[in-house]
Structures are given as structure tokens and as C-alpha cells.
Image (cartoon, rainbow, N blue to C red):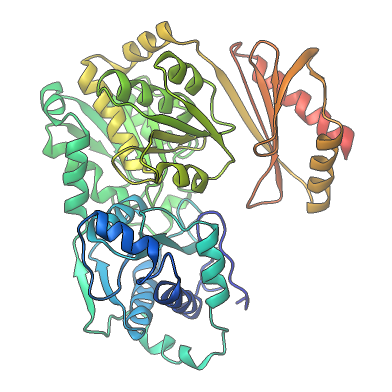
Length: 495
């Protein structure tokens, strides 16, 4: 195991039994304990936490942290390791009594007035990967300031304080740990955000695929309670995730597509194992891109629910969002890639919705972070409220807005090559692409070359892998592939 523990954009993540071990989880829990006991803003006596408690009318006599886990191998046992370490530092702990989606943990933090939550999860990674997410008191994944503070407080692997790691593994051995059902309040909250009366009247048939993850404790129960007929896949336990990578993209949802078609379902919905991202299959078995679903949900929130507010989205999210925002007089703001930037804005309470192209949305009056469960239920809510098939809703949507097409590719490059590419684009960017003038360059995150006519090509380095990512969007269906090809030529000319 590496001595150094570093967080990525969504927490700490590594191979099970290599980077993620009982000892590394315990080290992280001790670092988090010091952070919440001592930080002047995010800690128990911190200005930020006290302000939020006062606003919500909550009084905590003792630091409270929630602990949850996903459906992966050893996730529950590692969660218990974290819980025991927190208790040893005088912290009151409530442990989820069933696998806990990240957005549910985030809602529970706000609802319970907790300092934060630890969730043991590998999100949508392969079966042999696990990790730890720290959610702060505002109900979102830790920001950069929090991460840096925790990292410097993590004890070394030979610290004497770690002596109990082997004997505590897999067991809750402290009286200060409380088992807690965190589902009920979350689902009750969703009922206030959705048109449950329309759901009960619509007599919908929905196919669900939790991909062997935590959504299996939410999809069927919530929908059937409100009169929806449910057909499900992958609702059983399988720590190998059926031998597939459990993301909610088109490749992983092949079986859901077949189920939707064979059973003539109105829609198929899916979430990755910790439910922060979503996937939608229409009634004809087509995977619908988040770049299309998110603007449709925004339109639904504005037209049918009469909600107002600002909009934020990552810079490479579809310009279809711009059309919906402009048509409804909503201010739009771009952010760098990474949902933490959207969360920072959503916390203000001024933003109706935040979204990213990889399948994450956040909605006002909920949590400030992405919630795949809510996204799926809002897609179902849209059909129920409109009283029309999704195909017709989509057709009507494109009577109001211009349809756009997009494409994305990733190209492996060395760190040196990536740095060279970005430096050259900064110094000498292309002035035309595919014989079309570059109208504007957005350097919010990498380089987004916006062409005359509105189509665009973006080139940016991945923040987590040694990859250069290319994105393209246009009104012409075949043009994104052409722009991606031109982007590859630009890169090849540099390296």
C-alpha cells in the first residue's frame, strides 16, 4: 500500500487490498476526525457549520458523522472500520442499515444536521476498485480546501494510533454507533419534488436497472408505491457486477434496452452503483444522452413546475442548455469540468439546476450535488405530468429548440505530451477548423473552439487519467465526427 493517500475529484479511490485496505480507511477516518474537530470553518466549532445549524434550527451537543457503504465486496466491513475510528475520537456515528447511495447520504447530512458523511464506494469503477467519499456539512462532496486539510492530517501507516485496525475489521465495537434507516426521509423528500398524483394516474410501465448497486433499494419501492408497474434487472447481489463495468452508459445498458422493447415499457432507468449518475433508455430501446435528458428536465422544471433560478453547467455540456435557458430568461454560467464547481454554485440557493455531460444533475431545494436517482425519477415524472409517450414529448421539445448532436473520444498521452499539447494550443490556437472560422475560444477548462454558426470542438486534459479528451457538437448529425477527426489532426501536428 502506498504511504501517501490522495483524493481525486470524487474522493479517494484505489484497488481493493492494495490501496484500499482496513488500515488506509482507518487512516483516512482519523484524518477526517481531526479535520472536523479542528477546522475553523468546516469543523464542529467552525463558522460555516454553526451558521448552517442556526439556519436550520439544529443544535448538536456532540459531533455527528454518518457512515454508509455501497454493494461492493467488503464495503460494509470497511465502513465499520471507519465508524470505529471516528468513535475512538469522540465522535457520534450513525451507520446506514443498508447500502447507501451517495446522494441519499448527502441529503441525510443536511436533514440530520451532521458534520458530514463517509461513504465507502468505488462509484462506477470495476469490481476490484473501492474508495472513500467525504461529504461535508453542506451536503456535497468535499471541496479542494477540505481535501487539502484532510490530506495533511492523515497519520502515517506506522502511527501507533492505528493499532486496532485488524481486530476492528468488519465489526461495530462501540456503543456510540447507532444503526440508522436513512432511506425514509429521502424518499419522503422526493415525494414533495415530484408529481406523485400524476404518477398514480399515469399507469406507467418502467424498467429499472440498478446495475447491482444501491439503487435497488430505491427504484422499485418508490415507483411501485406510486402505482408504477416495474420490471427489473440486476436487483440481486453480485460483487462482480455481472462481469461488466457498472456505469450507466449505453454499453452497460444493453440488457435494459432489450427489456424495455420486449416488455413494451414506457421508459428504462438506471444508476451507477452509488447513484450519482444516471442512464435513460427510451421506449424504442435507444440510450438517451445526458446532454439531451438534462435540458429536457430543465424545460420540465420551468414549464410544468414553474421553477425559476440561474443555471450552471460544465463548459463541455451541450449548448442545448443555452437554448432552454435563453428561451426562459434564465442566466447561464459555465464552470470547469468537475461537479464540485457546480456544487459550489448550487450551495448559494440561487441556482435552479446544475448539470454535466457525463450524467450528473443537481436541482434546487434538494442537495447541491448530483443525484442520479432524482434524475431518473424526474424523467418518469415528465412522462406522467405531460401524459404523453416520451417519443412525443421529445418531438414537442424539438419544436421549441434546435436539436444538437455530439461526440466524445479519449486519446491516451503521456504527461509530457499532454502538457506540450495544452501549451501549444495556448500560444498558437487554430484560427479555423474544418475550413470554418473560430469565432471564440473558451479557456474555462482546456480549450473550447466555438465556430462560426455555433458548432464547437473542445480539447482538454482529463483531471484523473493521462488522457486528452475531445468533444464536439453541431446541428448537423455527421459534423461532430468530422470535428473530432480535425481535433485529432491538431493534436498529431503538435506531438
